[in-house]
Length: 136
Image 1 (cartoon, rainbow, N blue to C red):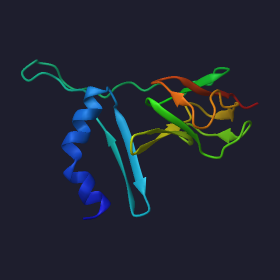
Image 2: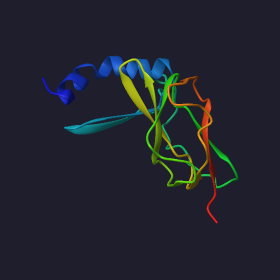
Image 3: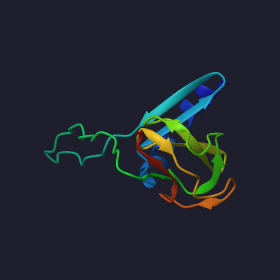
C-alpha cells in the first residue's frame, strides 16, 4: 500500500483523535505527496443551527506576535535563524509527537525572533516557541 492509501484507511481514527484533542488542521507530507485536513465544527442533528464560515481576521502585525506550539511534544528547529524574514503560514519549526512531525507555522509576516526553547526541548500545547516582529 502507498502512504496515501494507508492514511485513507486510518482517516476515521485520525479524525476522531483530532476532534478529541481539539485539533482543527493537520498537514502531512512525504516524498510522494501531501495531504491537508481541516475539520469543521460538529453540530448536533436537528439543532436548527446552520454552519457558517468563521470570520478569519488578518494576521496580526503587533510587536512580538507569539508563535505557539501546535501540540505537546519535542521541539525541532527547521533551519531558520533569528532575523529571518517569514511570511504568515511559513513553517518555522516542528513538534514531534510520537511518529508525527507537526509543523509550527508563522502567525504573521515579519522577522523571526530567537527561539525561546532549544532544539530537542519538550514543549506543551500552545507554549510560545518564537516571536515575530513586524518588518520596517
